[in-house]
Amino acid sequence: MGKWDWQVFLEDPGGKIPTYWQWLVSAWGWTVSVSLCSLVVALVLGSLVGVIRTLPDSPWLVRFGNAWVELFRNVPLLVQIFLWYHVVPKMFPVMSGLPPFILVVFALGFFTSARIAEQLRSGIQALPKGQRYAGMAVGFTTPQYYRYVILPMAYRIIIPPLTSESMNIFKNSSVAFAVSIPEMIQFAMQAGEETSRVTEMYMAVTVLYVISAMVINRIMAWVEKRVRVPGFVVAGTGGGGH
Amino acid sequence: MKKQVLALAVMVLAAGGAFAQANDTLAKIKSTGAVTMGVRDSSGALAYTIGDGKYVGFHTEMSERILADIQKQLGLPKLDIKRQLVTSQNRVPLVQNGTVDLECGSTTNNATRQKDVAFAITTYVEEVRIAVKANSGINSIKDLNGKNVVTTTGTTSVQTLRKNERAQGIDFKEVMGKDHADSFLLLESGRADAFVMDGQILAGNIAKSKAPADFKIVGDALSVEPIACMLRKDDPAFLKAVDDSIKRQIADGSLAKLYDKWFMQPIPPTNTKVGLPLSEATKAAWANPNNKPMEDYVKK
Image (cartoon, rainbow over all chains, first blue to last red; front, side, top):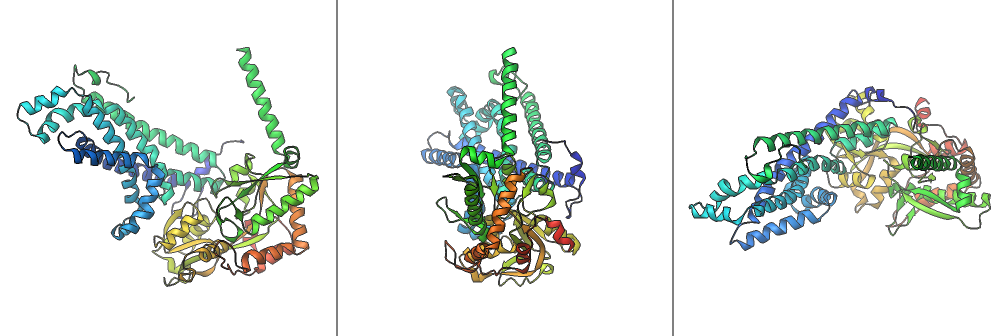
């Protein structure tokens, strides 16, 4: 396939941004922003839905939680992005003023929240029933025993799948290109077309994706080690995310 | 270990063979009795789909005629024409790797692309224009200051737009649609105030839209671009066959009739007219068949 030409990154794309590498950095910024914002949305909503799916004596809340997970887990991500971008603003005119960035963050956040909810549910259900009863027995209200007994252990159990999910969100953010977010895939397509150096563009983008995902992986590994409870069986291994 | 080396050698040989064959498209067509043409789904009247896997348009029909001529030239009793949908982003790689043999859509012939692929003679000269909502009050590129301007990812219009932006000292927000239909949808839904793209793509999209009277095309041409069929590089026999067929179509007037059919008469699916008469630039290209890249047009 001919020789590499890395100097292409020093060329001038002819706009506000003086060189291709600076454009790439800005695209990376978009990828990171979309991913981190979506991750926050996903963690908050996912925790909420995951908890209500395990509530005792609230069949309707549990059903709502189940419906949430099935809805957002069973519709392909790209379809969800288009729904948020083209359909939702038509149904709720208030939302047509929102920038595409917010809509993409919602789409990616809601999609991932269903997966996190499912993980949290399995984490909570992995705990022995006795923990819940013990909490009740010492007189905690439901929010209290979730806060002080169940959730601290459940979150520790699900750190490995959460790590995968956080890395996934970085990779899934690439679909944002479909709704005009100038992130890295969009950069690779456009810059590749302009310079005829598609391979170099995609390689640079790949390296940045790997770096971003690895940083998340290391952070989560550090968190896992940090919050480890000595003697608590599932958190015993420390290290890696998988 | 020896077996693995042998397997590897066989694979390399097979790959080499495939490469050798890929550069002689006529031989490939003759031996397989099949050819793959690249088609577009929303490149205005040049090439688009009317659904149901049917691809039509000026360049689509022209390339069917080219392939019919090639079938005659090769003396094939039957030629199986496969249609492969391509996009602005994947058309060059798909032609390069042999998935598509001949792509006649809305590909601009420019010097950058000539490094990767070959172009037949120019059959249509495109002018990049600005489409806006009729009531937007935008009349030229200067009015775009502070506006959202959409253009399609993977097209040359993006660069044209950026260069104009810098040259004229205006500041607008660039939005990138993933294909022409998507870009037009952004204009239609008000997410973008203007859509900068090839004039006929704009005209075609407006003609197909729900309310064509709501849109208009304004301003001078931002750039002039020769549009041509794209094929694999370093395949002179196939290039000549394609060029000969196009020259034949120009000479006997059938290409002009074809232009009239797609640009001046009502076309499916909505039976509306694009209404874009044959431009002087296109007439000139037909009179002097050439495959000069876009850069040569700028110098004139």
